[in-house]
Length: 141
Image: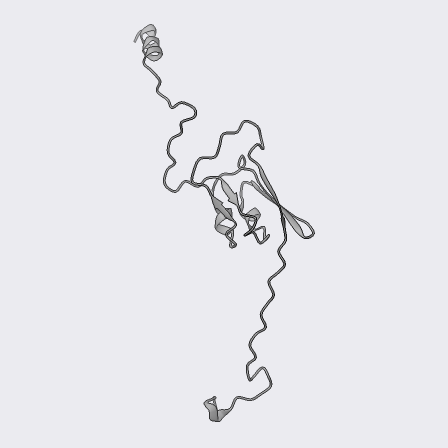
């Protein structure tokens, strides 16, 4: 094929790609950017240990902790969301936004530690109170 013919077809044949702002629809099961709900977080830091790309950092302090997430490092594997028993993490189904500088999408939260829930006292049983079970009441003999 003549090079000039090929150039002519490419120049005047029209666009064959999507324009920048338009994006294709996300496929079923796409796992996107991680979202954090500080009200639900217990401060266990399991998400940090499960994050293989080190996109989540966790720094504990007295009475508070700092949770940070950098989507630029994230592989969107979903391991942190699966490991969060408190349900503080979720993932967006849409494509992450475009960014031009390193760390532009980084999110940090400083969260006050919640006091531990009081443990309920176990119910007293007759054996625990020092009493023998009554054989006449159907106990073992």
